[in-house]
Length: 101
Image (tube, rainbow, N blue to C red):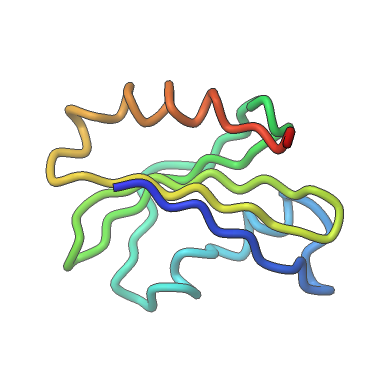
């Protein structure tokens, strides 16, 4: 499953560092979302991204990539029934994410 969402950047988010400390999935999905490991910065064609893995009780593990472009936050979310088997594929797919029209 792959979803791409864009939302307006709110005043409390200036950069990826603000998202890194905000635990965005916990805000989005509630306390059922538990972060797996530490967030990491990765470079995508769309620009610098924050990559965070989560476990969600109902949906299993998933990964989100956050990219800030001006006044927009782009979120790419990927999950499957067997996250560990697909993690390398998720990273390869995210490596193609571009904001070029």
